[in-house]
Length: 195
Image (cartoon, rainbow, N blue to C red; front, side, top):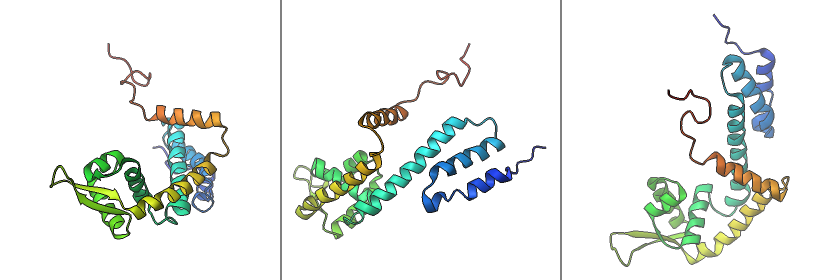
């Protein structure tokens, strides 16, 4: 029977990576992937490493932007995106705001209550359908969102500052390609074609 205990040096590397304290996500992901491949040699190492690294970098960047720009501006990250969408589009029904933002209707409803309470958003009835309720930014919300967007963009610029403009464009293209519709089964060569 195969021994599933991890190699002690790889385990120590994972524990000592200080991924949460220092943000050293690279040593953490290397150790995580190495340990997984030791225990499951059939794992696609590159795919695991790429997606784990993407996930951890995304969380780190999101946390930074929320803590340094969105929360100081009075908004959580989801509330910021909802307010920014309303700033760009004008009044929307909650269901449409949910579809645009990628949030659930219940999440938008909960955020709306908070934003109304904090003076960012107002609810009004549609002039064409009395049953329909629209959400929109208040004058104060419209005035405040620009400053928050500016702060967010300052953090965004910080995060891409190590990249050249060409590399930033390439990163955007690669991320777009990553989330494009997957190739049909068997097209990648991973699965045998039907005969």
